[in-house]
Image (cartoon, rainbow, N blue to C red; front, side):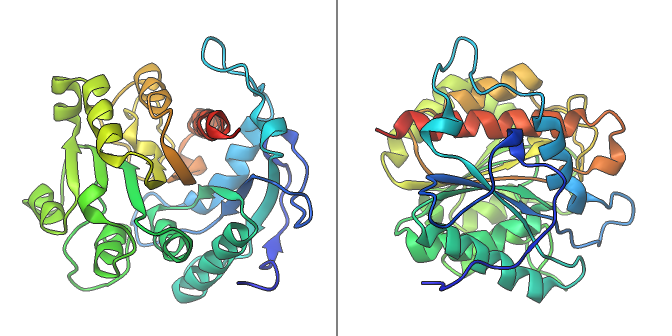
Length: 308
């Protein structure tokens, strides 16, 4: 068990104005920023600024969800803000170590981490920490891309996150899903490759052809009470909703549809939430970060609903 909290960097705001994390505060859920991106994309750099932008946009949110939940998750979960982990873009091994240590520490305090990335690479060290604390961990990954691509030159990049997770046996791939995959692809037969790793891939076409309600019902029936790592890449939404993400992809759900799908996850045993790929330099209105803050709030309601 980690004996001390990892180093954090300064931040300008706390999520929704909540108080700072205290290891004696008995928080059941903790906000944490992971300001890191690999910097390998030739055009869309800047996901390291995602946590700050999400926090800033969260200041205008209220705690209740009209017509869905009258719980105040801030109060019920004693929600606190851990701050941003002190990371340096480009120092991949160092970032992985610090992220894993930070998640491990929060989990050792019996709190659920709610993290803001950062690009999709921040998910791997989180799963490494999660796997230490939760047997039979599964992942529900909502994304336009599976991030489970064949490893070619570099072992670690945003396309191989879940390939590495499968190889390291961090999650039970037989019960894990990639949901919403679509659009242009750099390689052929990616769904088949993810399937060979054990994952179930639900394309966006399949999701809407069969109906989100039916798909999510089948997933919930299969998972039961298994611990779920919820990874929500913001490009799951259509590009018209989230221009400020690492790789906007057309053909996804609008905001209403995407948030409705998130609400339908009620009842799952969510043990971690990872909201990533907000890229503020590419969205001058910051609506992508605002939508991400709403995703975080909804996820907190899902967690609070399961707490007695």
